[in-house]
Structure formats: C-alpha cells, structure tokens
Amino acid sequence: MSIPVSGLHHVTAIASDPQRNLDFYAEVLGLRLVKRTINFDDPRTYHFYFGDGRGTPGTIVTFFPWRNARRGGRGTGQIDATALTTSPASFDYWLERFKQNHVSAERAPKRFGQDVIRFADPDGLILELIASDRESEVEAWPESSMPAEHSLRGFHSVSAALEGYERSARLLTEVFGYELVQEEANRFRFAARGTTGLGRMIDLLCMPDTQHARGGAGTVHHIAFRTPDDASQRACRDQLVELGFNVSPVMDRTYFHSIYFREPGGILFEIATDPPGFTADETVEELGNKLRLPPWMEEARAQIEQALPPIVLPVKR
Image 1 (cartoon, helix red, strand yellow):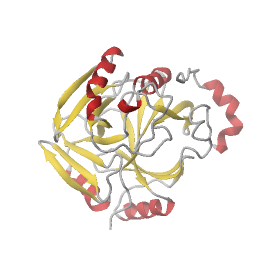
Image 2: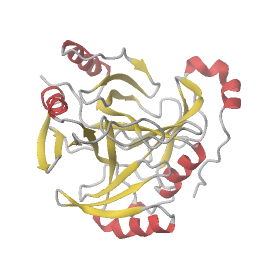
Image 3: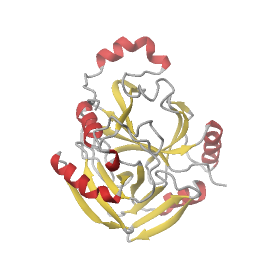
Image 4: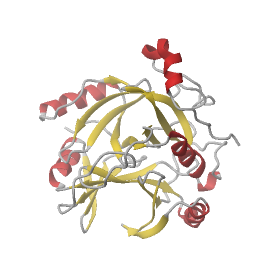
C-alpha cells in the first residue's frame, strides 16, 4: 500500500541576501510574498514563502536567506533544478523579461517534447520554466508585477541529481505510489498516480561520475510532498519507519505539519500537510504584509525584530 502523497507541496532553498532574494522572486518572477516569518531553528534569519495569490500548495518556493552564506556546490545528493510552468505563448515574453532584468537565461533543448527555459536566481539556484497547456489551477495575484496571462502556474517538477537512481526510484514507486512515465538518456520521470495536479512529477538524474553536492546559498535545502491531513501523515510516518527510514517526529510549522527523512540518494524529503494553510494567522488580503511569528516566540518579538535585517517589501500595484 502506497503512502498518501499527491505531488510537491513546496521547495525550500538557501539564499544569501534577503533583500535581493525578495526583489528577484517578487519583482522579477512576479510571485506573491505569501508569508514573511522566521527560521524557527534560527530566529535571526527570515523564512520567506513565495507562491500564487493565496498560497496554494504546489506553488510555494521558500527561502532561508542567511546573510553572507557561502555559495553551495552542485552535484549528486541534491535537487539539480526546480521547474515551474507557464503558458507556451509566454516563452518569448519570459526570455525578453529575463534579458531586461539582466538574468542569464537560455532556451534549453526540448524535454519530453516540452519547451524549456533554464535560468539562475541571484544566488545561482537553477530554475526552469516549462511550457504547459494544462489549465492553470493557481490563483493570480492582482497586485503582481506580472501580467496575469504570463504568470507562473506553480510547479512542473524537480530534477534530483543522484549517484544511482534505482533505490530512489523504488521509494517513489513502491512507497509513494508514483509510476515511471518517461525516460530519456539518464533522466527518468516519475509521476504521482491518480492526479493531474501541481508538481506531480519528479525527474531522477543518474549521474554516477559527478561529485557530491555541497550545501550553501543557491542550493535546495529540501523538497516537501503534500499529504491531505494529520491522519494521512501519521500513516506515512508509520510506513516509512517500518521500512527502516529514520523519520523525524511531527513538527508544527504553523501553516502545515511536517515530518522529514533522507531518501536513499541523500536528499532531504519532507511530507507536509495541506492544512492549516497560510491563512491560519492572516487573511488572504493580508498575506505577507507583516512579520508572523509562531505563538511560542511572540514573547521574544522585540528581540527577534531587532536582530533581523531591515527589508523593503515589494511595491503594490
């Protein structure tokens, strides 16, 4: 019996300068700053969440912007690229937008018949835009810097760089219930069964001659898969423990509950619940406007705010 996951919930990466990170994802990519909070394990550091107009799971890219963080190194045991979807008609728009904003971007070779733009954020994190005719499930943000017809439409997939892919593939198929849907050279694409939703695919890249990755700015810290509720998450945890994985206790992240473990290739996986959601402590209209702290840290708000670097929020349109 497979555990109840239905695709990506969010991807969390490491950045260096918080203002530069905020400007790129909100202004250049046109994503909404859905939540401005802190790293619960390091309250001197922000935790930014970017996504669609209401913070839909499957659209969320999050960052720990550690000031002056050393640049990481690409390699195996790491997410090589995070792919977002956009309309096929928007490709020329995006190439021109990247050019105007001095973002290094290129039209990559087609992948499984789909057009791909490959680019990097200011810290060197590799991102991709993949053309998709699938009807958008995301909610546009009226105050975005991006025209609605060209806006990003949530996750397409992630590409995981691995020394060997077989054990990771077995986890996806036998435990997560994914199926192998396409393969090409050293790329093996798996998709969640029974859903056509956001971020349902993950590509495994078999790269045995590549050095091991080094964490740091410009690298993915972990990827999170969706599960519908706490009961489903408990079932996930029980099955993973039974299979011999070292799984964390359930952790309260305020907007979702999380468990963590390392998949066989060394990448940190999270399984996150959809509820309570990003409107747990503010309305849809208020999302991202104020620094939000978990209840157990409110007493230290003054000290936390003093330790955080000042930032300028995106201009509302």
